[in-house]
Length: 311
Image 1: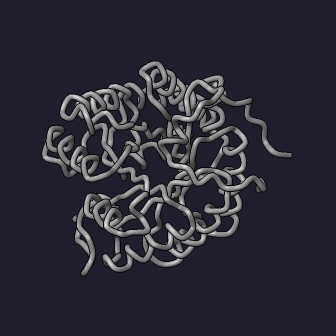
Image 2: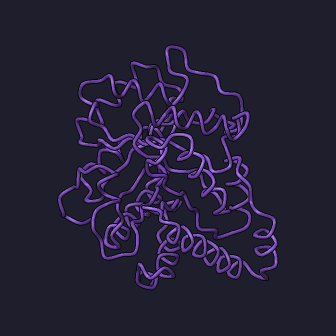
Image 3: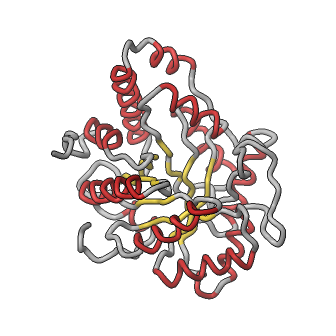
């Protein structure tokens, strides 16, 4: 790992800092489930640091050893040169536990927070039941964070949903609740993954039209490079988003797994190219703790050297 000193700067500063590349990019990691996967994640983190990632986010594991590993990774990330965005969810936490975690993040200098309700344990699309003594909505976590003296200067982000949250009555209701989180103190949002750029653009338009002050805060597109049709379908199922029929046909027409992967990288590159043309401030890649697919997309955009496997 690089010995460069950690950069305790805000996500907003990180994505708007002057750079040689066409646009900022950032990456998302998941809490690894074993030591080998954890080493792979740190290798990817080093690769993305060297490529100039604006920041890295780490999702929040709910329950058991995954949560414990999440905490340990957060501590190590606090010493990593990558600017870090930590996720926090309400799942299986009381308000007192959330306050303790937030104060711990503050003590480590981890002052970029993605405030999320989180998915119901066991079934991401199941019925949400708040923990006894806990909070019910992401906006409650924003308000809790702002009420803690040590955390008042946190830069807070939230999730946004290009196709609308699956529980929202309609797109207007989804826009309303996203804006409520931005008005409560969130400074940016990162979208759920999507595979149709039009959905992202319409989300951005809805927010700006509904609130010319808070609705124009950065909306960062969440992209997942497709490396297999099965994984794409699974992610769509878990997220409640959709896979356009034209894209599915394009992937199904591929003759081999490697061809599917090549099509997926090409599609993600095309999406990223259009998003850059539409003026996004950052491209956020959901990496699944691997570097190769994201670097291949960045290479297609002229933002990274060609991928070469380690010897």
